[in-house]
Image (cartoon, rainbow, N blue to C red):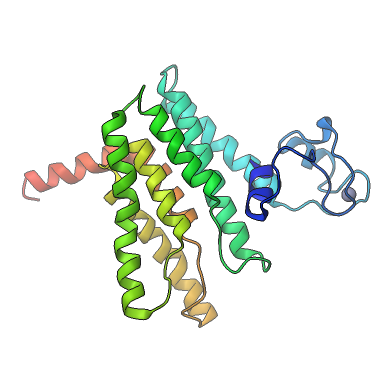
Length: 246
Ligand SMILES: [Zn+2]
């Protein structure tokens, strides 16, 4: 995943060359490329030039490991496990790429590469031949996922003449619709906006700059992972309250 996160936004091949130190260019041996462990063994420095290795690498590895562990526990021994491992992998890759490119001065704003969002949409549609929600609702989900963000971003553009949301976010929502169908889309939109406001508002107040671009991708991914684990429970609580008049 780290290879994808580093190379896709720059449009560099993800296959060649093999992993190398960004400082000295020395090829990283397989035994120095073990997730998290190698970072600790090497003391967070390159074996050859002693340059510090970015903390982003073990952070990505660790969070992927933790999410995979919980997904494996939830879907233990179910064939759907493979779908949810692929799906959460794509969500994390999109979130980290968006966040790191937003923090990187080489990029104007956060980027979610099409290889992840559109490629992920195709993978989501392919899974729908075998699993829930089925191909019909998967196609419908992808279309509605795109539109659910396109409409507010189009209206924002009409009013302010500025682009409020990146196209990557729209395509990421299409991917989510392809994997999960239409039902969860409003839930995910609501919680990603809520998470975004909770984190974004203090940032805006500190930076005193309303136009400070905050990547939305990480919040969308976070809300979607939140939905995978707690969506059913929260939706049933909500429906119960609604029908009992509470
Ligand atoms: Zn080096």
